[in-house]
Length: 398
Ligand code: GLN
Image 1 (cartoon, rainbow, N blue to C red):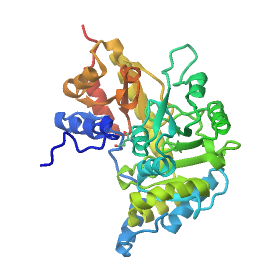
Image 2 (image 1 turned 135 degrees about the vertical axis):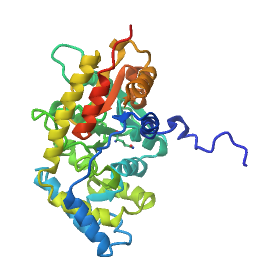
Image 3 (image 1 turned 90 degrees about the horizontal axis):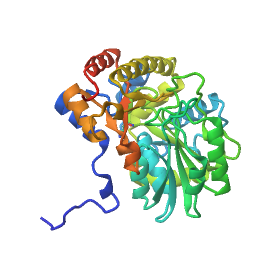
Image 4 (image 1 turned 30 degrees about the vertical axis):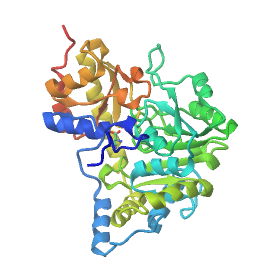
């Protein structure tokens, strides 16, 4: 054996093993209901499945075109247009990737050089910081704080802290709206503030919008920052099939960006995966062209699940923060007095039989995440009922 303590590259060593793989493993080991890793426990729509099966049977077995099968690119562009976001060129401005995860890495690796800086709101989805590290870039963090004041009902950031994060080296800002893990939907005012700073500092926005169809409150509409005045030319908008259509395992995502930014995404994509699974792209095109009421039905289920879960967690004595979108909510475990965030998670998985994630995993400044626990509620009704039944045993320490 070669003599090295670790074969993991120095830039990836700080990340350890993915919190999602880790908590799913612990949930299985202890027979806990998995409200940790965010994936639905039910099937995606028949329209998508039938089209993918037909594509396999029709012999679509070879590499897809690098940028995506033409009618998938066209369906994505048509949907953008139907949403009133303007016209885009499916050939030059849409790139299909293996999930939004790959699109995140492509955008970062394709655009950044070592020494460049990226602004990230924390808590964050862990791919952002790992992707920045792969690019050799440095992250600067801006906190999203839990609502605490009367009248506040969403996670918020301090505009001065955001402004101070911009330096002459800042190349990109990663926005995630609706936001994992908080369920925050950024408001038009917040987006305008972010946009103005990015315009002033000549910074590109990488906007991860995978939860855009999972809006749980009608008065919190999703807004794509690319549609704000001045932003079309400096935004890479990312999305995927997985969250909207409960097909997370299909790993079909995409990036929408003007040609110069699409060129950067493609520069990485062509050597990252080259192309994504051909039959699944056919399935994706079918459901994106004809979604019916699938996203609305899913959102309705998740809304009910959120309310059931929030009530159960409140009964346990936790402080539950409002979630307006996605399929996650955050609750503060500290009123229960069950120890650190890690202690609480162990108690929850091993004694109560429910798995969740402590938000230290989503923070650079771990102490900010220490009180906060993320629960996923993208599950069948019976799974949620079982989780809630188990949560009745969760009580403050005596
Ligand atoms: N997006 C999902 C979550 O936040 C998990 C993604 C993954 O497992 N890599 O739970």
